[in-house]
Length: 94
Picture (cartoon, rainbow, N blue to C red):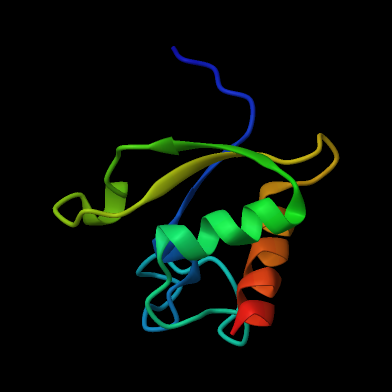
């Protein structure tokens, strides 16, 4: 088993056109239309977090080519908190 420090995030987590059942993980008011990997990278750079790009497809939509990123936030930040912080930075950039 591969152990990674950090969380894997997908662009689908921030897609406003998807429901929670379809893979969106942030509140609709923080979601954006057509989030791109570049948008997420700018948000992560603004937060000052380390990241690594991954070449994977989202398990729920394996046939679509999605972007995935391994993020390394501070140890005390949970994944749900990290997603909200990233989404807030995405919203601030609009």
